[in-house]
Image 1 (cartoon, rainbow, N blue to C red):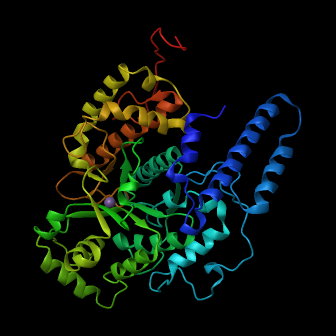
Image 2 (cartoon, protein in one colour):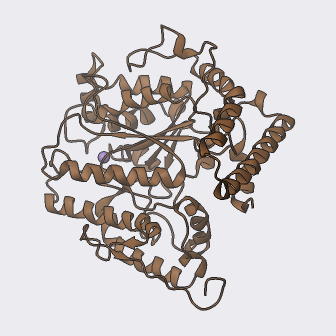
Amino acid sequence: MVSPELSHHQYSPMAKPYGRNRSTPHLTDGFLFLGGAFFALLMVWSFSSLFSTAPRFESTTVSESRAASDGKASSTPGCGTEGVNLRYDPPDATFYDDPELVYTIEKKVENWNEKRKEWLKLHPSFAAGARERVVMVTGSQPKACKNPIGDHLLLRFFKNKVDYCRIHGYDIFYNNVLLHPKMNSYWAKLPVVKAAMLAHPEAEWIWWVDSDALFTDMEFKLPLERYKNHNVVVHGWPKLIYENKSWTSLNAGIFLIRNCQWSMDFMETWANMGPISPEYEKWGQIQRSMFKDKLFPESDDQSALVYLLYSDKEKYYDNIYLEGEFYFEGYWVEILPTYDNITEKYLEIERGSRTLRRRHAEKVSEYYAAQREPYLKDAGNGRWSWRRPFMTHFTGCQPCSGDHNQMYSGETCWGGMVKALNFADNQVLKKYGFMHPNLRDSSMVSPVPFDYPDEGPWG
Ligand SMILES: [Mn+2]
């Protein structure tokens, strides 16, 4: 039986093939039909294989060779990389074959839109769904952490991102080398993001997420539709940029960037205010004189971004979406005290909804997220809200080095991280039948009770 989820997916705009020349209704329909027919075939096969003694690899071989022959998806196109053909790369030349193309941050990439489009044309299974495809990029230092619990914390922060990506069908890349020797600390992400853009022509968006940030609403999905006319998305507030001139008017620790030529040029301009620039020192002075609340002398990526928005509003304001409506990332000090009340509120919702209490496969979590939405319409968003904060960012606490802002103690930082990580982990563990009864105690788990009332097919 084809589930409503699947048919929704097939006809959603998310399944649109990339590029105008590929989206004639006839072609699309034919493709969807084939996808559907093939899915039906797969279903028949998987049921029959349950009852037959035929070796499994026979059927697998058939599906692979069929898919490999035309480079088409082996099942329904989606926004993730499910249903794409991982075993097909035609001999036609692409930008990868151009000896002039280099991945390093100092060298320009030109005509990137055309190059990406060409690649997608040669890889039709990736073209379907390309417009909504996101690759998450994150990373940390190449060496072991100085903080004795640093590597453990980083592992848990990474696990949290892997969990989020698995639930939503995103790919993730974790980098732990400096791709440019001069671009260290907060500048290190720019060379990584650029390299990821080239390594992932199948993705429309690269999503940089700092190692000290975590997802604390595993259900929430980025409202990509809202960003369709923008190339960069950051958490920020125009008033703080243009009136207060504050270097914390946005946060550069988490950003979405569209995989296109505009972004390539933008990254170049942005990176050229960093340590690779002969004018690095001068940029530090400019930033300091401009942002009175910036207390350190070096040019940093965040101030550089605010500077670009401030000094060339014409060019950047229309392209950079300042997301201030929800916790695209949120300051942990503000968020931490809200977890307990939020946990209570969500439990209350679940007590009133059999659907939300229903046990289900992790793979279909997005369905239940949508079912929860109506109950959250009064929850608000961001500060003062009782909706789970999308991301909690431990700004000012460095889990790896162990350094932290003198405003708070290290214990507050690490203890806060543990609580946030367990708050997030509970949302994941639940699908596996367990939960942390106490958010401060990572090692203790209890089974989730199975408690259906008498009505319904499970009673
Ligand atoms: Mn950070």
